[in-house]
Amino acid sequence: AVQQKKPKKDATSAADGATASLRRAREVLQREVGRSAVTEAALRSSNESLAMANDEFSAHANLWRRGGALLAQLQRSRYFETGLVLAGVIIFALTCIRVLYRRLGLRNIPTATTTTFTTTTTFATATTTTTTTTFTTTSPYRDEL
Image (cartoon, rainbow, N blue to C red; front, side, top):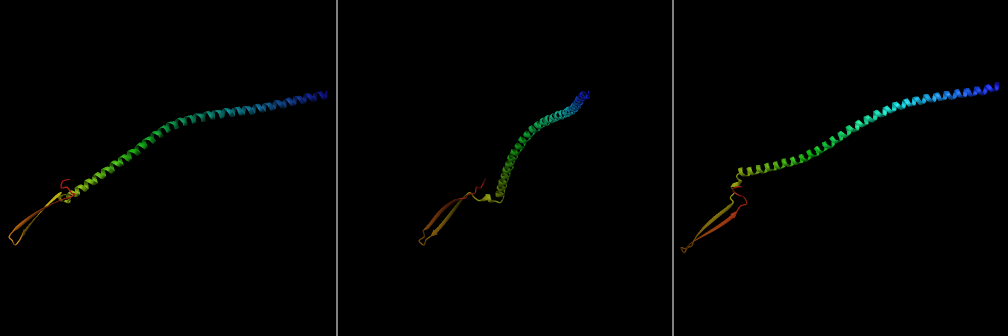
């Protein structure tokens, strides 16, 4: 009888040990399931934040593209306006030169000069010879511009 109680006691203690081990395993699994739920909630929140960030980034990317196009247009306008100002300065300088040219009297240079030389030669024979020579020269300057 002593021998029969021992195997029953061993079987009971083995069953108790297995039951305790299963309870500990169950508790560990419950804790892990709780952690998994917390982790899942954190992942959901993170995914929502990432989705909102993606939407904002898409909106900002569109604004950046439009802003870049506007900057390029402003750059082209700057070059065009610089050309207009340069052309205006050149026209103004040429006008100033023309006014100075006219004010300094350089316009009074004749455009065509006609010079007449009359030579009278008298000989002892009482013969008079008159020679008229006409020279015409042109100037590169015009009287009226």
